[in-house]
Image (cartoon, rainbow, N blue to C red):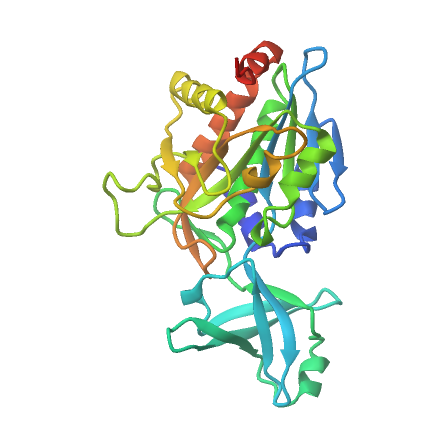
Length: 348
């Protein structure tokens, strides 16, 4: 694991459509490694690693750059800054949490987040107390309607084993995996034309991978995302256990993977002895849900990293799961050539 990179990604701030800090990190890490960099019109960033075959298959691996956060909706006459959630911040993480708002000047201002709750206990009105008494004092801090922010948490590696604590692992874990895989694959030959993307705006409708897939006219799209692991269930019902490897997702409400591609990936993982878990999402969805519908359809499957407390002010993750996910992405990338793709897309 590269804990320095993972912590840089976690500590950077980016909600949907405001992902410049993550683009900058990816550009710094991959600009001298990959052959070219491109962007779609939503702000997804894509790095190319050329294939050796003539007319190679295009495979897109993507991790979404945005995280759950907040946007300023209005400022009250007593200086309270009321916000809405952007991307679904965890409901039990919106009381007495330190957050930071990024102003138009780029300055980040820290305050304390609270929420009024309805009769059912759900947050009905979230507000940030910056200590202001008037809207003029809030304005003096640089805070305006439309400014956005995130939890003010810092990533850290526990002194025991490979345990990581931090914010925004959904989906900085995926960004980390595609970035590290791109570095490794740049050092080896591969038949397919590989693209490694940080996609925009997944948390508000799985948007960026769709436009990235269209921009590239990719043949195969493999998002690397996370899944929320239950903290107390450690038996056969939990296929998202920390430390047991990434999940190969068999189903979610937005996407049923191509059967041949799914079993190809399972076979690759077994052959390469990469630990993995077989997961099914009862609800939710990922970038595969929209990307696989581009054009006349794209082959797609999701790789997931198990995380506890996703969308919260702090999440928990294991470095060995990140390492195994990088191993799996690299093994998949090396396994795809024109003949394999022709077989995967056959329906007769």
